[in-house]
Image (tube, rainbow, N blue to C red):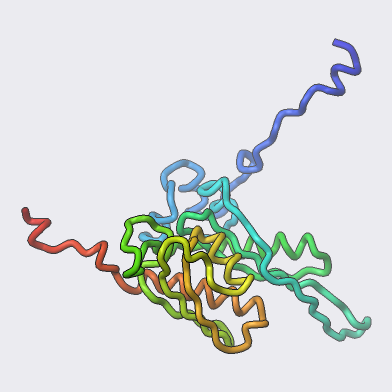
Length: 225
């Protein structure tokens, strides 16, 4: 083999999870294959303290930057500036997380926000709660929910198929990452604060587990038979 062929030879891809050494009990359980889903983590009340846990469970996780702002502070050495980034992560199938990161440079701030979003990842319920549709596809939410963050309050209502995401651009990003296609929304407060606006949407989606929808009701008589 010539030197030119050696230079063009592709390098083997290195999986960062292979070099990952878990520091928590949950991390060791995930790496050893004893836990394979977010449901088991939530049922056992485990707390995710390593972003690599989410990378191992959801290798195709999507992320999106929803807010970029500059933070200034005065110190003894002068005025210092840093980036404040809000990132939303999700797999499009009912798993969602949001995080905020700060750093003097843009890329480290995005990585910090992404890591915190993975640590805050959780699950919400999808469904079709619109009386105009009544299908069984999880294209919307099962019922009306409310969410708040700061001065922003958001109300999400299920919509029939083909309606689309009736909300602002920040809300569309959150709902699209969450895997929802048809939702009506009503917002109040200072919705121009994109970070709180996105957090209000996430808080509203988390309320879907506060109540069991009729589609999942199981009567005791049916189970006995």
